[in-house]
Amino acid sequence: MGVNDRIESTSIIIEDKVPLHERVSVVKERISEWTDKLEENFDREKDEVRLNRYEKKGDKYFYQYIIVRGVNTLKRNLERANQSR
Image (cartoon, rainbow, N blue to C red; front, side, top):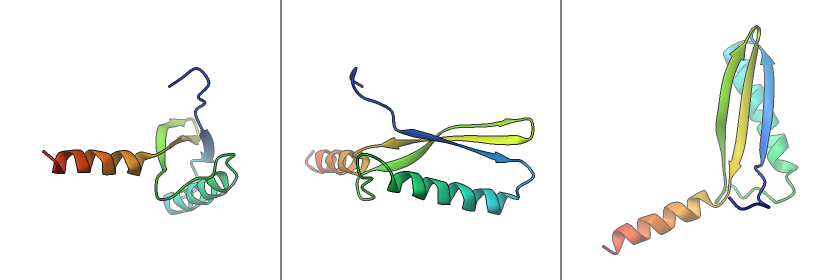
């Protein structure tokens, strides 16, 4: 990463009394809202959202997600390189 690069991330905090299926729904909704509001458009064909950190502290779950740009492009380039060998 260069000096001017910034990490695109979001943190989501959910109380532990929320059932797992509801936590999954809440996280999915918040990630969708977040990716819709990014300064640089989120390209679902090329970019990925990844769980960077997960922690349970007391009665709360903490999730941190990051954007990894151009992942599918990198995968395609690796596949092409492997095919040409």
